Length: 346
Ligand code: ADE
Ligand code: ZN
Image 1 (tube, rainbow, N blue to C red):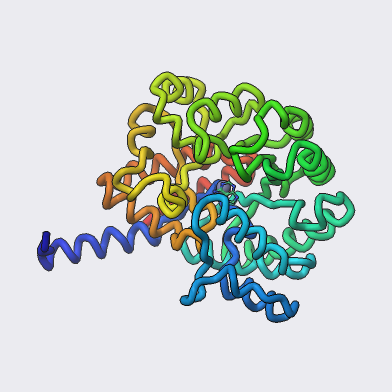
Image 2 (cartoon, protein in one colour):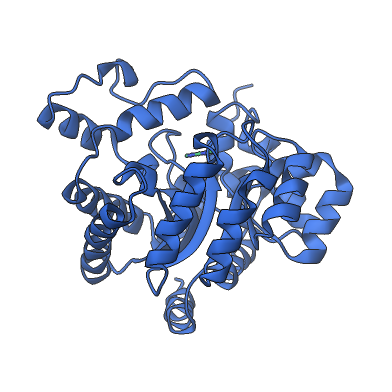
């Protein structure tokens, strides 16, 4: 149907979108390598004389068929990120991009698997480079980065233990969290209790990807065996009302990435995404982009889609930001600094 929009409506929408773009945002679920702009990866491939043309479509965007293929393409892109300097440059590029979206606090998944294969000594060098870039980005773009070390489920429990060793060795003011990503269809959360217990003992905040490709049982198992305070995605909890109640009662925070779920074919559009139902049921939800260039999204685009699809207004976006601030894996001083930035919301 050809719907006409009046001039006044057009202006109102433009004003709303500008306000959403300017709003200070917190992002709790972003994979550092997954945020790499395709041009960045192409330049690295050229420098390293590696042919990666198969991972791009004819417009130069990342090309994948489904979730498994996405993980394969993601890992192929990572093969040209080989030195601490590469990760320094990547971190700076990603933070500049995030800051341009109004992000003032970013919690980013860092993967020692792609930074020296999980060797603790090599990981320290990569981490130092990432942290140096974060310091520069804080100064130049006013964005704060905290690292959440993530193991990768389909690389198996043994390798996850090694990643937990990297996390234990570098836990501190910058590395503040530990998580698990990757193919939810492989292994079981009970296989990963050791790395999660080790990370908890090291004082790290915990999050686990679940309820993205797995259903409610996958979320329940992650909660039971890994005991995270947050779940990455978790959206398929909506298929089980008792689990929704449990999440709401326990205050488990969902890192929801609607654009990612849509690009990977989980839901057909933002308007059919369960985020609003989960929120209305009392589940604490936050909004992130996951791997923005892979999914053709940005934080501002997510906010605009949510406003359009569910009529979310200022109060709900303020609530989302407060939920993210409360759930962030950071120290009290950082939390208070970010709270001040939220107070300046235009
Ligand atoms: N790694 C990067 N993005 C991911 C996703 N959406 N699910 C699982 N693992 C991932
Ligand atoms: Zn993710």
